[in-house]
Image 1 (spheres, rainbow, N blue to C red):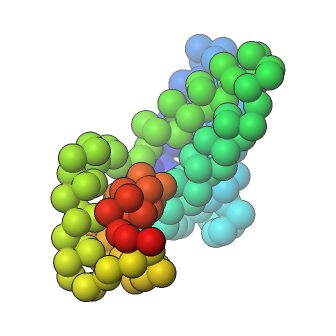
Image 2 (image 1 turned 60 degrees about the vertical axis):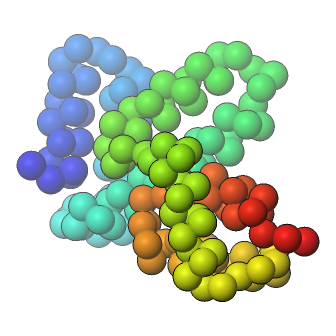
Image 3 (image 1 turned 135 degrees about the vertical axis):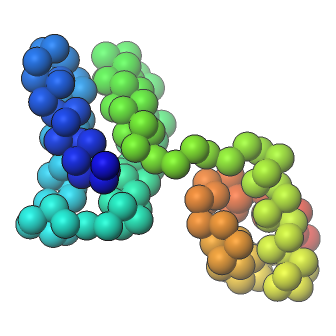
Length: 143
C-alpha cells in the first residue's frame, strides 16, 4: 500500500471517528501531494520529501509559538501524525557516526567546508535529520 493510499484510508477513518485534528492534518498532507501532482501519482520517495519539509515547517512554527499553549498542543499533534508517514529517525549515535564518516570522506577541516560535509552526509544516508547533522558537524569541525 502506497503512502497516498494510506492517507486516503486514514482520511476515511478519521471521518468515521470524528477526529478533527487528524482529519485536518491528513487532508493537508493530501493537498501537499496534489499540489505537486494533480492525480496524486507521486512515488513514495517524493511524498516523503514533501512530508519532511512540512514536518520541518511545523517544528519551526512550534519553536515560534511558545506563548500560545492551545496552538502548541495542536502543532505537536500534527507533528505526531506526520511522523507516522516518515521513516524512523536515526539515533544520536548513528547520526554522529555518519557525520564523522562524512568528514573523513570529504577531508573537511574547518567550518567553511560545512557544505561539502552536508553533501557527503546526504550521499551516505539521506534519512539523517539535517539539523542534528549540521549541529554535530559544526561541533566537530574547527573554526
